[in-house]
Length: 385
Image (cartoon, rainbow, N blue to C red; front, side):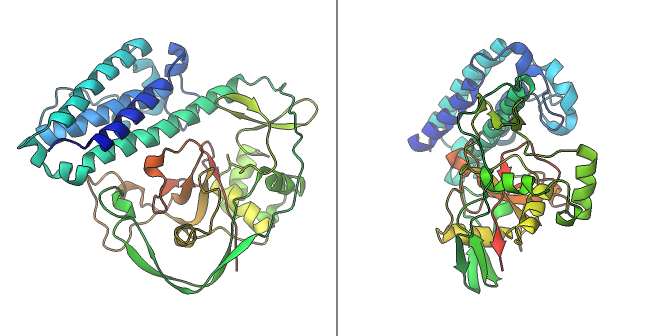
């Protein structure tokens, strides 16, 4: 059976949108590494195509015509600093990928038995897996674009609206002590979202909105980055090493006025916009300063399912628990997607950013990063007992 038209439209859309991010990009910016924890933008472009071919040909059809060379686009085979110089020219890559995606989309539209009987095509699982894989790298490319903008910012932007500090707003909602359901559903959910879990939560209050720019500025003004009292031992060690004093994308001009930098360039930091560009250590420090804490991911997901949270798609929100396997977890479609990250060193984030595609905007989706990382679009929401 051929892939449904609605799924093909979604696949085609994310393929096109990903390629479009490279419109007007120089070959140099396409292959330079702008952040030590990010690959060059062009690597993500080629990696997406490689993974699409890997599943549709090598795994499903035992045909490695397009994936014989695993030395570049398999992450563990090529360190990040070595990826950029090995990339083929940008224009050549875009033309080749466009043609290959045309071929693959036709394959999906025309597939018939025995090909269509493969288990990975059941309920269009692999099509949706590929779509979501593209969606995640689409957002990562935006992280690279922001880093490019940060590296080229001249520090001279004059904001039209001056950011001023405000106290955190205690606009809280009570979640009663009870049993709740968390987790995803097949076929869209990743293995780490499954199976559905019945969990018990104690009563807690959760903020209806994430922390804003003006609220975070208040933390800065109140010695948030200079008082050890707000920081964990690991967080304070990180802070003393990195000597940061504001979110990743915040900058000040000569008049000491704050402004932000994103992939489109410098912009005003609006008071009520959701703060992002902070790591787990910073999020915990802010929460302690505010006499609050971060939510457990089950608390966040429960509140989201009850439709009690607003602005859940402005910044990924740090949770206070590490990434772990649910009871009766089963790795699928391969062991390496989630299992290596159940290492106690990665913390869960929930929600989504302004660059997160609809394909992965769901309450059960679990993003995970190490606590020191802050180059992604990550913020926080507060919980009170």
